[in-house]
Length: 218
Ligand SMILES: C[S@@+](CC[C@H](N)C(=O)[O-])C[C@H]1O[C@@H](n2cnc3c(N)ncnc32)[C@H](O)[C@@H]1O
Figure (cartoon, rainbow, N blue to C red):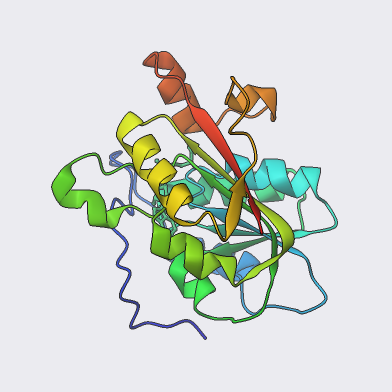
């Protein structure tokens, strides 16, 4: 189903730094139980991209129990935590794609998503790595076609470099999206959601103030 010739390569780590051994056979068996397979036209989907340890997917699944959250992440240590929390909380509305979000985006041309969350995408601050950034003008235009009417995209970042890059992409896509919270003084995540992901906590501990950008499809 997924396009294995994906040109949008996924960079970054698949395993954590800990030397702890993982039983990969067991891991892939559990992934198979919750694996995202195909889109169902009757279902309203939430796309959660780069979920790390899965806090956002659990939050969204609880908040929107009538919708299905597609959680995209290739970081195995993070997915193990997500899968544990799915089972612990008896959650039945999360489907995991253990890989690149582009596989999911390229598997459909339907307007499937009612909501998109992208919390702390990797900033790739060095100029020579800028091409690795997920949120670009092309990405926003590509995803626009797959969004339902009035769909919102929530993007959180604590990187000044990425903030400028995201704002530039939003500006380039002004015919596709309206930036809803641009007039507000405060772009604080906590003004909208009570959620603390690993990277949110990292930012706060390092005295970097994260910003949340809210876009709505035009
Ligand atoms: C900085 S971490 C943020 C994790 C989490 N959202 C948080 O707030 O703690 C970014 C994550 O995005 C994942 N990621 C980056 N590009 C991706 C892509 N194209 N598809 C799926 N996941 C991606 C990485 O593997 C990484 O775990």
